[in-house]
Length: 316
Image 1 (cartoon, rainbow, N blue to C red):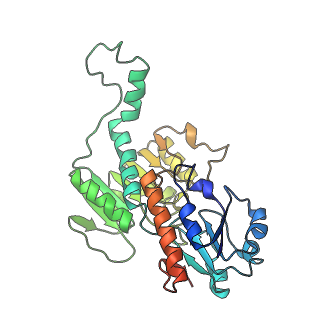
Image 2: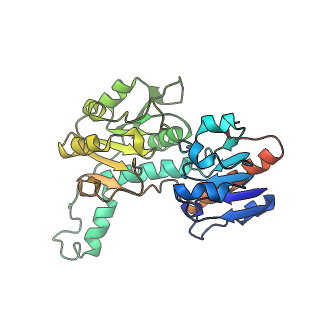
Image 3: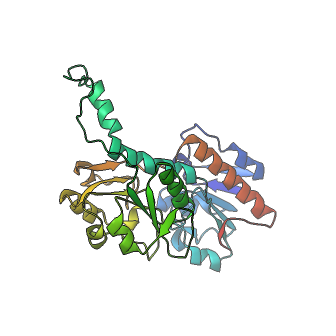
């Protein structure tokens, strides 16, 4: 096989190796690929591996030998699935590799809001404790998460992992999911009920037509005054302007987001200047152990495809 990797830089900065993929044949690696560069780079590829590179009819139509697309990701909204079905191209994603990492990061955002660890660290490094009048200066608000209600929107593997952590913190857990689910000590409700009763709302659903901007002015208005909103799923599930307005108005007590609809963040974004907002640059999934696990899944997907038993297939 000739395998072309289109955006290796989104997976490794040299801290993990992609050399294992050479077991399957020739591997041509590009750090990043602009859309207009795609046709030339994949025109004679048997397989393409990518993370966020857009593969649609325009960029795929010259790749006459292409039979396999492997994703360094769970989401596949950057792939034209209908085109791949029509042209007998198998598409395989990498599911569940980042479950624990994203759940961990979700709570990192939550705990930063309630414990202000980053703010207190900066306070100490800037000499604030050295000039404090008491041994324990109450500079920033502190709150316990115990006994608070967390509402989880989307109860797949990540949502379930978040629920386990929340229960360990002695929180009350509400959940909303499109299809019926059951989970010990978790109460499943309608979305409106969840929004109205949760101190924290965290979203863990895929981006699709139903979830696109599901968190908007109306949705935020239904949340409890002072509630905290978390998005480590996809930027497109929220309307960023409506989130800013909900924060600026004081209706929301804060938000923690790891994803945006445009990434990297646009230069004219108002988000960095928005108070009570914690932002991280889409790194919830990116611990080194998680990325190493991802490479193992991508390897296994290719191996299974070659053996005629493809797995994690989203189109074939």
